[in-house]
Length: 126
Image 1 (tube, helix red, strand yellow):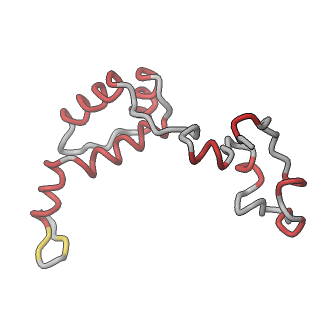
Image 2 (image 1 turned 180 degrees about the vertical axis):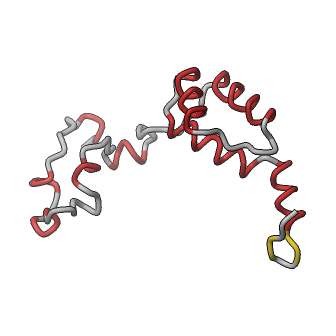
C-alpha cells in the first residue's frame, strides 16, 4: 500500500492521543495552543515536505548590516530602531532581534574583542 495515495486527515486530539494525555496543559507534550500549529505527518517530515528554514531577504540583511557596521562600538538597537527595521524590511520584530543577536555572536571584530578581554578565563573591564 502506497502512503502517497492516502488522504490526509485532520488533527483531532480525541482520536490521535490517549485520554491520559488530554489533561489540561498536556497534549502530546505540547501546550494546547501550540498543538494547533502546523504539524507535518511522519511521512511529510521524513520526505522533506515539512517547513524548511530559509534565509532572510538579502536587502533586509544589508540594511541591518549597514547599521551594525556603523554602530560597531554599541551594536544594540533600541526597541524603536528595531520597530523601524521591521517596518522598512518587512520582517517581524522577532526576526530583527534574532538577526542582531546572531550577528553579534558571529561578528569577528566583537569575538576578537571578547577574547582579548578574557584573562585566565575571567572577564576584565577595558
